[in-house]
Amino acid sequence: MNKPDADVLTTAEAAELLRVSEPTMRKLAAQLGRRVGKDWRYSRAALLRWLEAPAVEADQERQQRAQQRALQSLQMPPPANASEALSRYLGGGTRRARGRRRRLRRVK
Image: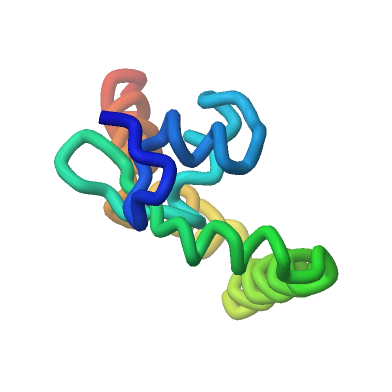
């Protein structure tokens, strides 16, 4: 079933093509492949294009993502006072905030 000319590759075949281990290929899966059910499939042409692309592009993409994350964290102004800081700490719909509120209620 292992066709060397296949256009669509499994994780094992893609790892073999790139000469990396399967766990390494799984780490690259979201970047290079498509999820089909529980499995990942890869385009041979896309893998070869990625392999031929200069590493500088990947570094630039990584830097751009880091800059975007930094900008997003800066968009929220610092709290003006202690009560605003507390409301931010306890507010929101995140699990962490809900847990904090629950623990505070138990203490009272």
